[in-house]
Image 1 (spheres, rainbow, N blue to C red):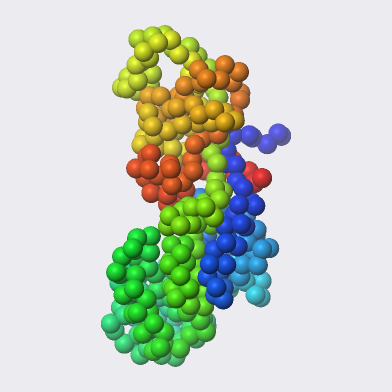
Image 2: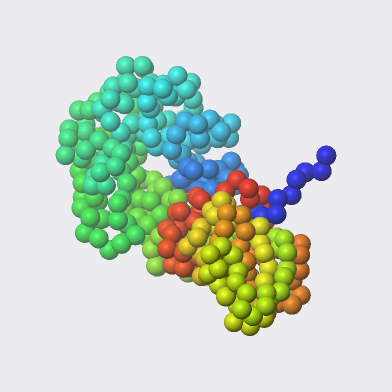
Length: 348
């Protein structure tokens, strides 16, 4: 049977992925550069991302939970590690003890659970001011973690994408934790943190968003290349007469006769209603504005400037992450991770 070809796809730029990782690695100085591939590689596809980055020299990967780890464990080798950032619940213990991935322990209960089960090497998260996961930096972290075989002691920056005084405060607090807690290595910086300078890099950086084309700080924009380009097929080209309306709630009324194309993509695929009347597609170098409201499975674009595009043709959606975030009101993270399963993912 012929393989099904979906009417929408993500064109994924493997060269851009590797270029982004190499640039981020260089910004971290002597620190090793890992990769956050949680949420299925931020929606790109964690297996293929891990395979490509491993080939480029990346040796440290991070996912959120044990189900994600199970998918990636066959790709592990003796010199490639995988860390599960959400630690170990009681429900995770059997899987975690049998896995080659490491838990990142973040509560006294998780530490006790791992220690009492005779668990091996682990990572430990210290909360230095984000008040999310982690042992409180003001507590006796060294006593809580005593006896553990800690591969990586880590924390996470809350405001690295901004010029916030909390960045320096978290750095100072993590330096204190580093002095108190014995580990093989120490890690603080995410994508934005890497751009704060090598003081934040320690032994290992953990980029996520920037690997996939997100710009976490303005200074990185000239160096980070887009990785993800949604493409959608034209299902119908049609003429709309002056005075007619387009889409739900008739939010766009044609001021003159116009040509539109209906594309097979909508908010069920992660192209959300914030793009209504604001987003665009591209046919080569010609911008084709979205007209009317984004619906569940369909959008309409004005193709009057391209009389040659027709049913069955493919258009590229304008999805450069910083610009798309500004247009839609969504974060770059939402734009990436919301891209749905109905897209074929095609590496180029």
